[in-house]
Image (cartoon, rainbow over all chains, first blue to last red; front, side):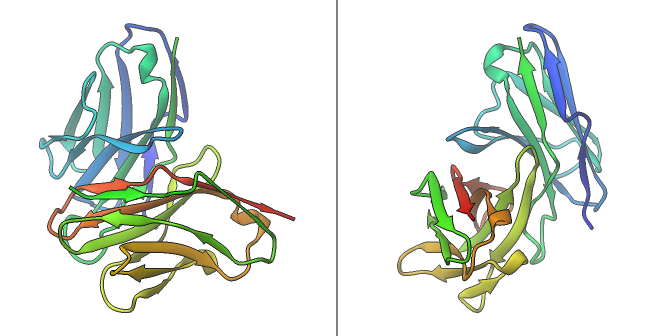
Length: 114
Length: 114
């Protein structure tokens, strides 16, 4: 079974703090993704990575950065957390080729910024 | 760019009745289509996908979906709903020419009442 794990299920941070969210997958997937999920908006792509040290901006990259130093690990960084970044953050991974195009998701991190 | 619409925010059905959750999509080329389910405080779980071949796709937990190219739809169906099917359902589309860009709908909350 594919396993995608996220470092925290729930996180509470103060405005202005630097926040690290980590994601690890164990299926040797090339692609990794960070989404945020907000009611009525579905999932919005923040950043994705198709290889180690490679990253591409998604639809809403402002206020976020990412790091992928190893194939299995993809980190999302909030440089200076703000209240409008309170959300559910979902990590996902997938193969980049072949017929198995579906993404596999972690359990999510619910971040509250106060 | 591809997009997905889930026209219903909420679907209510009685246990034992058939259920349908609607999805329409827009892509420039040929689509890959997916359904995911999310239970409370959990990540998204893959249900089924259409890549090629038979327009009727069967997936996990008795769900199926029908790809209709002329109507650009991929509705999720189940012949007999269970209370445990109550969850948030997301449709997603990917253009086969774009390796990494998957677009999700806003989600439909399914409630099955006993």
